[in-house]
Length: 347
Image (cartoon, rainbow, N blue to C red; front, top):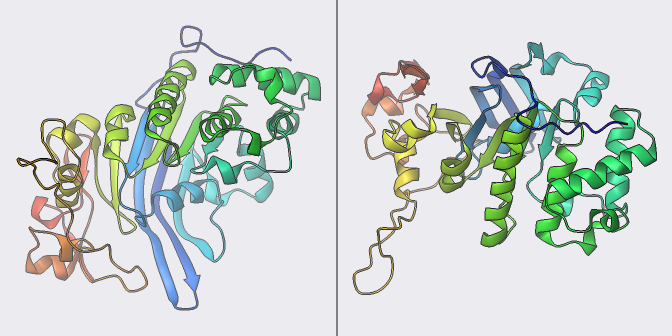
């Protein structure tokens, strides 16, 4: 089987303004004994070709669940209750299980948050990665293993041939994450969903993984959805940023606008809570790092109106009664805030 590696200079030119993925009014609910948790409650965003969309927000904001819903991987007791996930014009939520099995790993792949649990402990690295090509490309085992060795070397794993026979427990955390990245790239997918790809790693390895992802994204000209709670990560990696809070989108804009002119109070609060290199947080002249007061709402019984209103320093009486609708305030920049011109619907 010939190599399927593509260098940036060899890849065909792409129309980066043409949306590869469009998520429209996506809703995912968890049906628990205590009630219904609206983990994703009407989310909209899009991903253009060859760009990286960063999705940021606190834990529980719906970032990971929305990504899993794209691949129809949300675990019970969750169910996708509505919306569309249009990938290259196809609604993935209308696909049959057989169609989704053919698409996962081939056209859309995922880098999971914890490589220690996403790799099967009873199979060798070579067996797990070769299976992808044997399933999707009908490659022989020998052809598949040659491709695995090629990709393991590409993601920076030393002596890749020897790693084929190793099991996940024999690898470090950083090496397991590199294996996870290689797994996602096996079939040259158009879109990669990266779910907190550096959370379980130490700072030095985090930097290496981010640099690797940026290099591979440019090399293969693939699109990427980068899910993270770290604003520093999206500052380095993302072309555009979507900010989520309590299952809804607060703000979407290009990365430069988000960092230079954020409009939603929650976006500004996230930025204010980041440590700054020009500030001291220790010693006699130390400053206190700002935090966001309060806690995210309980999505079993979310508050009426804007879900951020009880933590928002700019909240008005209307914010407790009206749910803001995402509104475009400038080309490519949308926000869900009554103070920024959004319309509202009665809660």
